[in-house]
Image (cartoon, rainbow, N blue to C red; front, side, top):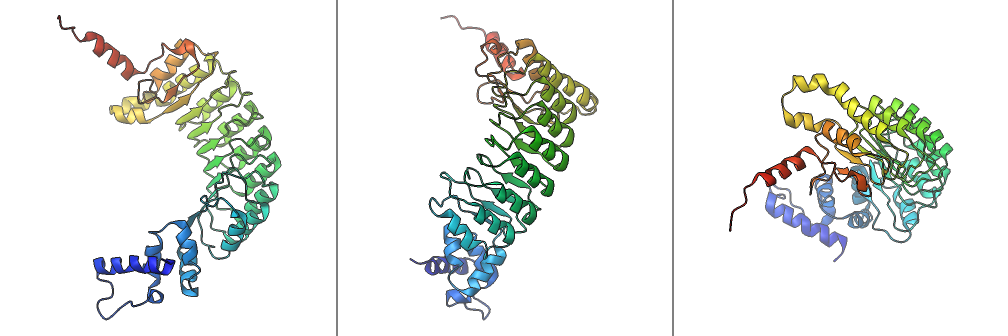
Length: 363
């Protein structure tokens, strides 16, 4: 069955259900499908079928090119680069483009073509594009200034100059994933991000071993709306980074510190104290427990932070009711820290007390 037959079958189902074709308007062939209905049909099929449909005729190509706003080519295991080059001239209205790869295929010329054609792009996923160089970042900086989400995780060839450049020109970024950008994610790059990208809400820096306190503090000072920050494996950072985040990012909900072994109790107490300072008056104003629990940290990963002690971590847990150690709700992750096994969230303690209070029935 060809794409025309597939789409026409969907049309017939739609006609029979909605009565389309009545009132003197009868659709007899696929070429008679109105643009609005064609776009509705296209929304029901996968991205491969959309691409095939765009080649059926000029009418379908034009309709899809104007109406298609998101596309994923992650299913393409071979020749993704050539596919992108052949499609970007058709799909110029894209706002979301997912090019995640299992094996590196994309080259700079494909990203340059995207930047030259897709000026309305708001979300771009280039993860695991090992072959890309700074040429791609320079092209995106000039061609896609409206980017809000950019995923370049695993793009190991990007330099800090390239990342700083795209940050300077794409100032609307809200989500920036640099996980594994071992060459480009440096303090120099983070300084630029903190200076230019003040709307950022989520930054992922996992296993970026060149990231230090200077870079993280730049993020904390420059991005007050930061809600999620992954610093897992950033082995250079110390308490100073966490203190800056605690004092300057009141909306922080998720913080990943896995294997940050320079973190000590001082960082934990800063988190707990910032909660007390910033929310004391709000707690008195609102007696609704659910609202109180929704504020502050909701996820904290301190696995392998072996310098931490139970009192400091318990203080954080007590300060943020949304942090849980109980089964099924693990949002305070402390694996690999054998000294922290005594730390428990409030509901875990309540469950324990309820269990021990139940009288045992004599047999």
